[in-house]
Image (cartoon, rainbow, N blue to C red; front, side, top):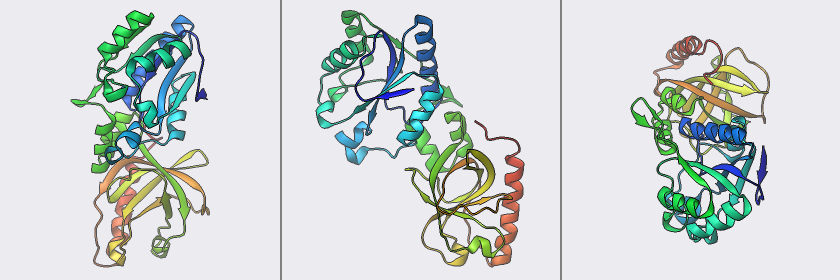
Length: 306
């Protein structure tokens, strides 16, 4: 997939939006864009923005991102999309009238043939560019606008805001269902207090790079090292049994003893095991950790639920 800041394409089939999370609703649109582009022999494209528009127009309302730009690119590419148009979002860009945006960007630069969006899509100044308005411009400029029905799961309409809320609640199994893969964070392995090592369960302490961290507690998941997912138990919290105050993310990779200090790793969350607790003593904590490991081993049989 080619990532372009300014593009000139012919007869493009595309979709537009922020696509934070690339959840199963987004995936439904991406598959349709790829399918139609291949059927028509046209280039497929995603038109998206950097940074998130709310960071520019209403920073106090700007959400933490589920995906960084690197992961968003990789996921969009995995659905067979040929081009990603990455528009720099500025106050000037935000002030454009929807008609001006469509005529300059979609018609003149991309020669758009088909547009695929969700039912609530809106764009341009004050979000005046509703789906119906876009359809009217399509009739004028000779492109079609197609609306994908909302994606529902477990009685919920799937959205990026819903996914964010569920991550913050620690409902990782449901989050994985809505994303079509486990939620993950990335970070660098740094020096910790070596508490895990002292009690027989060495951990990798993470300097987290991702925006959203699940709430305090113990999780079953995977640590991706050198592209290999390894079963793990993840602790997010302050280690209250040892009087800790600063929240950390620690990963015990089952059966793994290599030195990975300074390495960038990914941690994938499959299931929440329990809340963080303050134990009476070290022995009680060790028993609890052993139970966590046994539960994680049962949950993590096989590969990650990708």
